Amino acid sequence: QVQLVESGGGLVQAGDSLTLACTFSGRSFVSYAMSWFRQAPGEERKFVAGINWNGDTTLYADSVKGRFTISRDNTKNTAYLRMSTLKPEDTAVYYCAARFSIVVVRGADDYEYWGQGTQVTVSS
Image (cartoon, rainbow, N blue to C red; front, side, top):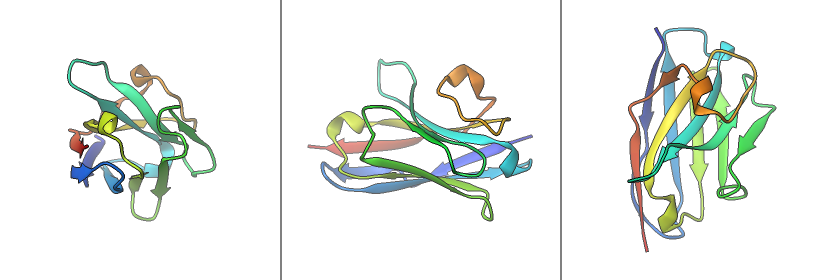
């Protein structure tokens, strides 16, 4: 059974940077595409960024393109989300998700495993 554990969330000010980490266990990490989603209060869970099995393909939501960077370290079974120039509208619970495929996609329904989420709050 795959387990995902997010870490790195917190309270920051607008313009600050923050890096989230997602530690993967239970299966072969390189068999999974990894993505980050976020959910703000009263809103649906939305795709933020995704990365394929070896890191040579990445996808981003338009709202974070140029500010966020997704990466993975297959030797550490960990995916990362580097968030820069944070804005108050980035405030949300951030979820890590894993898809049993070498191909990364944007749809939440295509991901089988989810972490518990980590809160990111950006104050103005």
